[in-house]
Length: 94
Image (cartoon, rainbow, N blue to C red):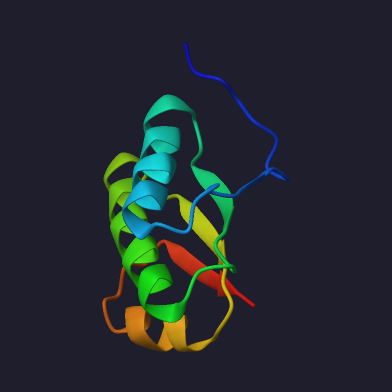
């Protein structure tokens, strides 16, 4: 059964370990209908945030090609790095 969540909910992983954060977010994508979602990883450093956004945006795109993820991040450098990958379903908020 799919559960619809309000679009105002912000998903925040409860770990600073990037692999655990990826697992947490990907499990959320698998379990819930989340075509458009907001994720706060502003507590992560730049390299970890780039890894998490790339892996999770790819997983999200496979399930929801028309969907979007709004990532709350700590630096615009994350957008500079991942922008070249042309993931297409991500937007970065500082």
